[in-house]
Length: 161
Image (cartoon, rainbow, N blue to C red; front, side, top):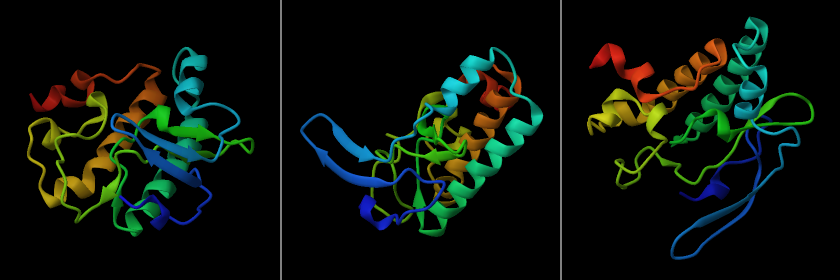
């Protein structure tokens, strides 16, 4: 995906540059001075307070609504990819797996397993499933914030097995 097509937004970590070699993609993005949402969840050693979950989830929703309004799918929504700015707000970063919804690609290589939707886990990557991938993962992030428990595939997929 051409990451320069994603203009600056307060809930998106700004992308300054990117390059790739034969093995890796390197992204130079805006710094989240206060770590990641994953760091915040681990430091809590249990569920985050309800008002904090609500605040962070609104940040997540605003970031995803913006990305999706540009017809991109992030493809790897998880606490490690939300950076805490000095102002306390979250910024979505790491667009290494992102692409346009209509882009030809191998959708089987996407996301972190624990945050993967059931459709993708079952290799049913329909256009609707592509558009909903980030929202499933956002629900898994909310679960992790609200329970303090690391998400595993079995948490999000157990009812569907």
